[in-house]
Structure formats: C-alpha cells, structure tokens
Length: 243
Image (tube, rainbow, N blue to C red; front, side):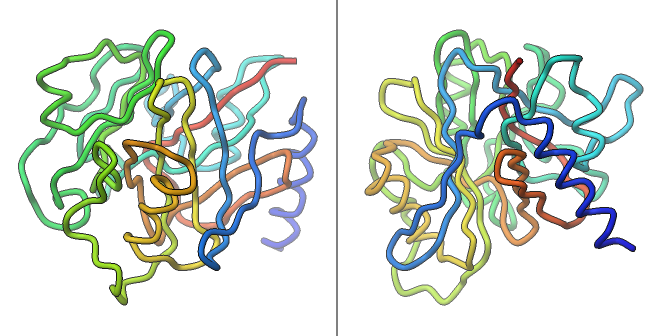
C-alpha cells in the first residue's frame, strides 16, 4: 500500500516540474553524490510551518504550500532540529527571526564549533561562521544555522580526520566566493566529514560550506522523480520556479 502511495507521489511530483531540476549526479573519490545548484536571484526558500502553524515536514505538505503556477525544483533538510522539529539554532524566514542564534560549543554535530549560517540576502548568498554572523548582522531574507562548518575560509574544519571511520549519509551547502552560486549536496552513500568537506572545497571551489544534517537527510527532486522516504523534516530549504 505504501509503495503504491509513494509511486503515485513521485508521478505527481514529476508532473509538477516545469523544467528539468538543476540537479545532477556526480562522483567524488568513489562516493556518489547528488548536487543541486542554485543562484542568487532565484527563488530560494526555507520552510518550517504552514500558515496555520502546522509542521510542513513532508513532500506532500510542502507541495501544498506552493501558489498556483509555482513549481518545486528541489528541496532538502535545512539544518538540525529539536524533537518537536523546531530549529536548534538561528532560523530566519521572510526576514523575520523565528529562532535565535547559538554561538557556544555543545553536544553533537551542531555544537562542534565552528558552526555556521546559510544566508539568502538580496542579490547574494553566503555561508558565514556563527560568531562572524553576529558581528556582521547581515540582512537575510532566509537564514538557517547548522553545524559543523565543513569549510571555513578555504580550510577544512580542524576536527575532521582523513582516516575517520564515521561514515553516514550527509547533506550540506557551499557557496561560491562571489556569493552568486550555492551548491546543495547530499551523499548517495555513507561518507566521512573529511571527504564531504573536500568535495565542496576541492571539487566545487567553495571557500565556505556548511553541514546541514546526516543519516535522516532527504532530497526531493521532481525532475528526477526522486522523493526520499523518512521521518518528517524540520526546516527545509529548496528552490521554487514558475511556469
């Protein structure tokens, strides 16, 4: 029964794609990834709850938030969340801060400082280390905090080990030096932090990149007929296009 429902959803999603999604398969050092590219000026959004205050969380509910004529290009997890799906760090939507920034070290990946913020501002995209974000106070239309940073000013996070045996599905975002391109990437096989970070730095040339989530990460790409199954998401990031 569930297989039938999800098969139907994939067909519906594929039918909503007015253009091929800006996503592609790639391989880095033998590990497969799916990479989705977005640009400053495109309709990059964050979602968490609908107008009634109910969690969005699922592909079906996400599609239900779109206005007539809007098409979902892709979407994925946008950062870590508490058990109730509320963000654990900074969350800005439509220019309004919904949850404050956290700059101190703490448990888990989020607290493995330096962590950082992905910011969508007018004409520019950025990944900013969290304490720098507080100092700079950029005017973000959308922003989400997560951690750890993968790449900081061209350097890998100091706690990443090249011979680590900690391998998981991981997703993250990196931004070009000119702030005009963002790469949203999910591994299609378990990968270490070190290799994942080097994908952004060495293959994509991103001077700054941010880890968004791990084993529960999901990707939705209508143009590829991809709808990853899993638990309801907290914050979601994605791109919307129009007919």
